[in-house]
Image 1 (cartoon, one colour):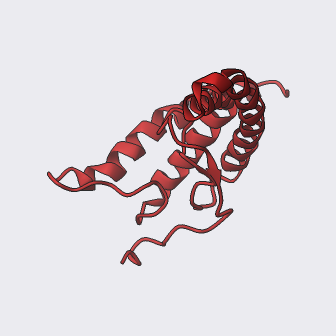
Image 2 (cartoon, one colour):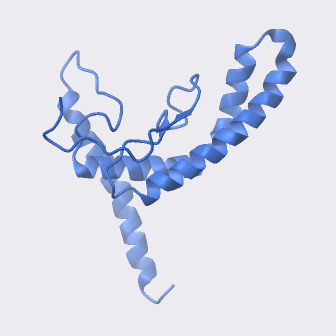
Length: 152
C-alpha cells in the first residue's frame, strides 16, 4: 500500500459499516404501520443507498459466514430423513453444505463487488441465518431492482 492509504481505507470501511444500518432503518421505516409486512429485499422500490447498503452488508456477511452452510445443511438433511439413516444425513449434509458454502461465498463476493449496481440478491435466503430450516437457492442473477417511482 502507498503511504497514507491505510487511514483512507479504514475511514471508508468504517463509513460503510456505520452507513448500512442507517439506510436499512430508513428504508424499512415506511413499513412501520401495524399490519404491514415488508417484502423481501430487492423486490420493493428501495432507495439507492438502501440497495447499496443491503448488497454491501449481505455480500460481506456471506463471504465471512458462508461456512455456516455446513452445519445448517447437516442438521436439515439429518432431520429430513428417517432416523435409521443418520449417517447418510451427516455425510450428505457435509457434502451439500460444502457446495453451498462455495456458492454462498462466491455470491457474497459478487454482491460485494457489484454493490454499486442496484440488483436483487443472487441468493435466497439473503443471509445464512435467515430461515435456517430452508434450503439455499440461487438466482435470478443481476436482475435490476425497480427504479424508485415505478413500484406497482
